[in-house]
Image (cartoon, rainbow, N blue to C red; front, side):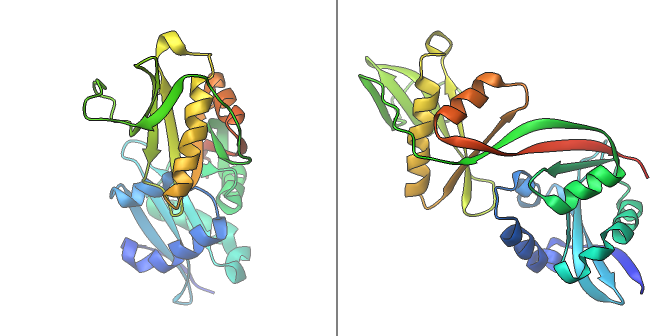
Length: 241
């Protein structure tokens, strides 16, 4: 069998990306790399038959962040990955732990593996309540500074927290973020606004998801209290080939 790895356009492998995202069935954090034109893509063939693709991003330290092979040919992954690495020259692998194929490549060919972020998916509908707190959309008259959040929490006429959505993820997922003003932290405002943003996400026809830094213990607790659960981690390692 003749294996080939060829640099190609996103359009060439787009049908395979559809299969990858459908099979994965999770919020793919790196999806925006394609949307923003930050990624380069490579086609995998066996005897000139297309069987998969890979994607890289980055300038100083190029990282492999997608590696997909259709199921009948997945047994050849350990033959194709080294060829892909040679063709693209990547130094790193960045994977989600809920992406089993790329994660397997990271464990097989990576060193210095470490987690950078925690990934969350919706788990249950929380019933948090805060007396005299209003959840609403941001108004033009709100003094938000550089904060362009779509929603706020208001208490006694003052904005105490803000939040909104990041849209640059694969359908139907949408990422929730929030910020609580310093004097009002650890009073339940963070979890409450996340809870309400989850409801808004479903009204928009999206599935809410979230992520936070591996060391951000306050955000972890906030998201869990609002009905999310940990569904994976974003991990990175250096390729040793």
